[in-house]
Image 1 (cartoon, helix red, strand yellow):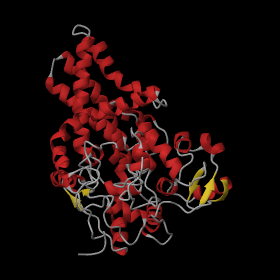
Image 2 (tube, rainbow, N blue to C red):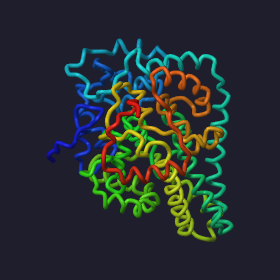
Image 3 (cartoon, rainbow, N blue to C red):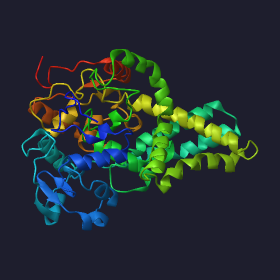
Image 4 (tube, rainbow, N blue to C red):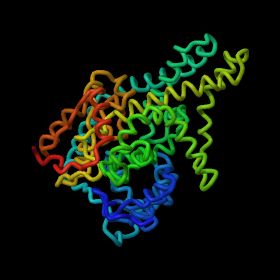
Amino acid sequence: MVIETWKKSGIATKFPTYRNSSLVTVHTWQQGKRQDDEAEGLWRIHDGIYDFTEFIDKHPGGPFWIRETKGTDITEAFEAHHLTKAPQSMIAKYKVRDAAKPRIYTLTLEEDGFYKTLKERVRQKLKTIDNSPKRTSDLIHLSIFLSIYIFAIASVKLNSLVALVLAGVAICWTVIISHNYFHRKDNWRMYTFNMGMMNFCAWRISHAMSHHIYPNSYFDLELSMFEPLLCWIPNPHLKSKMLRYVSWVTEPIAYFIAFFLQIGTRIFYSLRHTNIMYWHDLLSLSIPLAMYLVAGRSAGLLLCVRYWLSMTSIASFAFCLIGLNAAHHDPEIYHEGDANREDRDWGLFQVDTIIDRGDLKWSQFLVLTHFGDHILHHLFPTLDHGILPQLYPILYETLDEFKAQMRECNHIEHIIGQHKQLLRTEPNTRAPGSGK
């Protein structure tokens, strides 16, 4: 496919190869990134090329992260996922040479820049931070996870629509809360993400490696995967104004089928191309199985499956209603094509692509179940959501120092803004931080 002249990225010197694929998946994103990143078939961090082959199975966070990033530039991911100084000194022995070509990404991580300054202050704060909220996060997660089975079984046993809906909400909240855990080293809680028919391994790529690093850009897989149904990039070449209005009508349908599209796409790609399925893709089947074994034998397996599909559809709708209106889409937020901030610091780029949900901050439960404390989570994804509130004074101080601003709104305002963004076709000409 010929890349038209309008296909330019605001954060890189190249247009991502994967966006020319006929079927966009996590696998095509990885393939494209390996072609684009100038990592010379190994791992790139800043301007160094590293060979972590012998380190894959030794990685404290689990082999997945190293294995799946081979052949790519992992600079921002490395910085955001390692808060101590030990990893920087540890990787020195794996360096094989300096990179032959400059990085394609124009975002910076200077020692005296916003992100590195904030990171150092957070590192010091973590030495004295109260870690007890982590236990609350674990308890909330376990309670909601178990409630899936309680409500699902009750829906069959009592033939209750209310219980069915509650089971769907519980699936949705479990999926969202488990996202608190899959950014970290391997743990059992990350597997509960799969209760919604999605898979945490695929989402570690599309969410942690793509969206978290390059939000609202052409390199953000979470934008591409919704096109052409939903298009938030303000470019008439991608979707006309009329079709953007149609998105308002098709949006609820997309919400209801999103979970099914995720697994359907992965099954289709696995059958036609390369297998990207895992054994734990079967975990969501434990829900109808529990329904049948405990309460549904008289009603029959078919009824249990039908109920399960219904509650999964409810979970899919709720997940999209929360997730797509959580932080990233509003005409005031930077999207690909908008004017760039003069300071290309990666941390400031994260701030520019997010409006936080200010109505959630009073409740750890709401933060966990509604993607709250979003800016801090993007900047420090391995930290438990429960301890993020203690970092706000440091964040505010550093934002003031670098003349940046954290924006907030409530959920209704964000829903309205997200629909306005779906209609926006003209890029913002005023760069973030440039003043009125």
